[in-house]
Length: 307
Image (cartoon, rainbow, N blue to C red; front, side):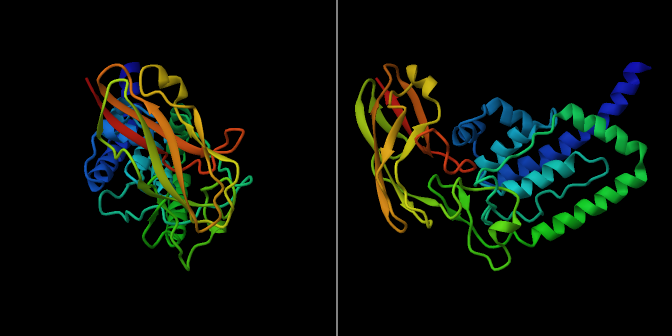
């Protein structure tokens, strides 16, 4: 009897995970069905196995997993945060592939000097909250109505098409219905700061290099905000992984760049001693290591090492 009760109680959780996984699969399909390894490479923070489990619906994914899945598909984090929360509410039916797939085209709100804080909700707490809501069906119905109304209001601000930031991530596009004070997420450390990826000046992704070869990787970035860039750096996001892969400095300087100007950023790379793939990502930081654009994808290079 105890096992039967446990199975009955976990059934809504499984159904929620399966419904949400169906939405994630639709998102991945709309993004061109990238492989999970490629998605993990774009994220730089999560494994392809975890992304695969999220799309399989074996269990309901954490927000961290969902966020990296959404980033890898270049979708709107704010919109998917709401979907992720709604999917865990009993009785909430999520829209699938027909839902508005508007990208992240609203400039995030400055908060705590430009650094947003996202509260993670453990799944165990969600299950407890779910049980309590089942005991109070009238309260659950009221909560669903309130959430739908809030989503409708917030949805008005998400319109237009996105531009590409310094790493190729969708960023804010001007909109008469949205302003930095109407959204919940912060996009930059300093209000008014923004950057855009221009090009791979050298070593396009997939370039073949010999083992132990040395080469210079150069990116071109543009300062498209209203803040002067001074004393900034590109910092490698995985310095501890340098032993088995491409060897580089942990960080390289970015030249002073006023708004409206472009800058070339160069890093010296030594290929590993064994054939394989080499992928290294970088984020723009200050002297203390704080990221200027914490919610955006990194810039990176990827080469194929041959014997």
